Length: 135
Image (cartoon, rainbow, N blue to C red; front, side, top):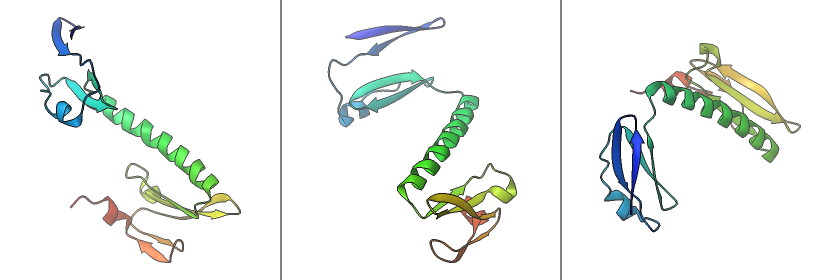
């Protein structure tokens, strides 16, 4: 079975499998259009327009904010004794923030841009600048 899609003035025939795909079948699909993203999700072929760079940046930032907020609450509730956040986009003095669990609540224990001293999970100096360098 094939499906026809319309994108502006352009039309394209895309295969619509009648079964869940294996990874080998997915690997065999030719990605004929650079403007589309092909994914295999639980055996289902998902074809969507590729995001523009501005959309990717916005999506990355939103995902990071949601992820950080959810993890913070979940880790605190789970009783994880230390939680560190490393954010290359934060102001220099806040690129690294460490939290310690005190009486079931996270409290800020350390902060820094190039380096930070932490006591938990063990006393150490965290080389924040080194962690963020790509070389």
